[in-house]
Amino acid sequence: MEYKDYYKILGVERGAGEDAIKKAFRKLAMKYHPDRNPGNKAAEEKFKEINEAYEVLGDPEKRRRYDQLGESYASWQQAGGSPGNFNWSDWFSTPRSGGTRTRVEYTNLDDMFGGLGGFSDFFQSIFGGLGGSPQTATRTAQRNARLQSVEQPVQISFIEAYHGAERTLAIGERRIQVKIPAGADNGTKVRIKGVGQPQPDGTLGDVYLIVQVTPDPRFERKGADLYTDVELDLYTAVLGGEAKVNTPDGPVVLTIPAGTQPGQTFRLAGRGMPLLRSPKTHGDLFARARVSLPRNLTPEQRALFQKLAGR
Image (cartoon, rainbow, N blue to C red):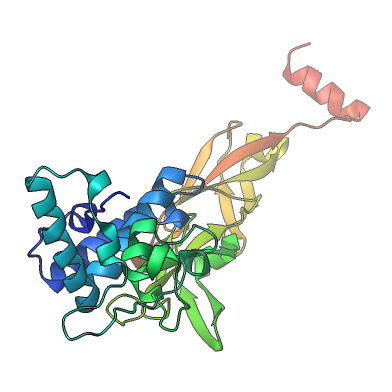
């Protein structure tokens, strides 16, 4: 059986304190959690190793026993022994000083992480009973392997992104009203602190809502700036006039100068999206002229156009 160096797995010194071990665990758990590495088997295996290491080093009782084993194993190696000849049976739930048999209780990682697999043979042999058979769990080890935060997608409309929105989040039996700020865009994260899963330190993790904004066919968004089309008939484009332009706050009237060209852009300052961290400040709205040409001319209209063309 292979000896597992839990200190090396967490990247801490053997004399590391509780806070250093906890910090190292959190950092690695965040990095290798399956939710952040979907389909990555190597990350899953690393994640299981990390949690197994913290299950031992984060528990004073298990850590003392593991350190005793480590000292014996190191002495065996220094004396020229090979792993295959080490007497592991001495450590299979053997009596400690005082005559009390070691009994470690845990839950299987299958239960904790939806099928990622259980603890290693090394762990089960040393802490879980003779021959590596796991004992029935009466104390959950879920605190050791929860991701510090949970991400949940939430969909809002374009207009809700402009004005801000609210959503009701159900967490267990709790229902929490969450405000999504004006100016949110695809990928915006809204943090809900202290309502998530239990953490190794006994606190509750955070939940992050990942915003998805449904598009609005009237607008194209580029950061805080918006682009839209304003339909003009030929006569308004040639002679000038007024036209209605869509904005997220409703239509406004735009003055069209004579001789407006197709594709010409008009800037409406401050009519764009609010800035996420400064909602009173808005981007601009750019209205692009789309000139509609008449398809069916009356004889009189045709004659006038021919006269203008000098025909």
